[in-house]
Image (cartoon, rainbow, N blue to C red; front, side, top):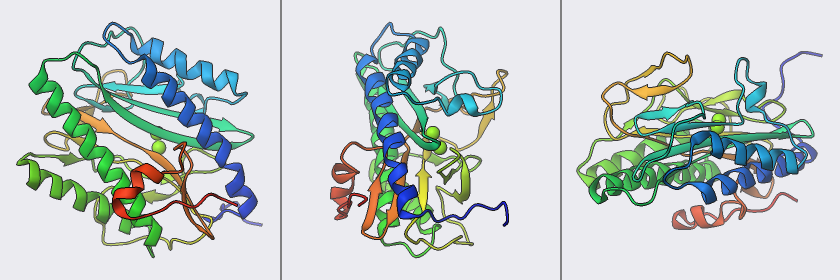
Length: 280
Ligand code: MG
Ligand code: MG
């Protein structure tokens, strides 16, 4: 027997993916309710950790070598992998929260971006739009998965959505190239790679049993980033803002189901004419 894990899970394994996804969603709900001026990113992380404990789950972020927190929280020009701590949120900040949980050996992974209420309106409005465009591109990618033959069709849909939004807004949006989505299951990060942009090699076939974390990371400028001196935080070189949205999604015999959305993705997929189907 080889060590290589199949990309395609059995129906029983897909059912086991539901609960960690819902715990991850509950973590982000708890954080969302707290985001306000004056709150520290460490307090947001503690709220997510409390949900993990209440639900009898484990923090899968703490299973990543060298990482000690339950979430990553990235503010303004930070795009992903920000470390929660003493930073105090200010009105109009754009804040991305990435969270995950492992339950009975299976994993969830999801991220949201919020704008802290009360900011100066032009800046806050542009940041809100960046978040909406990024979230829209995530749903476009998930919708594409519903009818895709190959995994690479997701990135084509994400990039196409971002390009149309940039044209409509007369704005520049950058899609990070150095960071990608991934398969998810027994481990938070598994194959295959899920690109957020068009690639020549469309990768593996989309078939029942595939579970993917799709996670566009988008800036309001260039896609160039650097890693800060803390060895984690990914920040834009040009100082533009970043947004990050992510869901874990299962493909099964009946269709697709967004594991990290309380409604399975019904609301987010509706504009694309896709109806999620619960895992039987
Ligand atoms: Mg994540
Ligand atoms: Mg992920």
